[in-house]
Image (cartoon, rainbow, N blue to C red):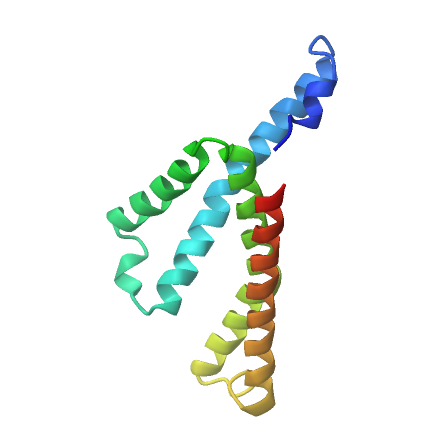
Length: 141
């Protein structure tokens, strides 16, 4: 990847420093939000609820992201782009569909029957495909 667009601005400009701090904060605080949701969903999908808050699961998840960001010629920008692609598709498509499907299992008949269930599974599948396309695009950048 190329240099940050913020590198084009003078380092003497206080607004450029404010933008750099803001961008750094976004990257810093984006990761825990996306990592926890991703980890929680994986644990729920594979039906191992005891792993969700287990110390080793949290450490392994965070360590894998840090290791990915540390790979030469990969860096934090691609790691953040992959996190953004996965996070956006997860939050917009996959998570709502999974929540609706899960609510159908708790005695509410709306989301668990027939065409509704197939539609929700399709939306979750579409979100997964779009996340994969986002990852592919991030890898080419």
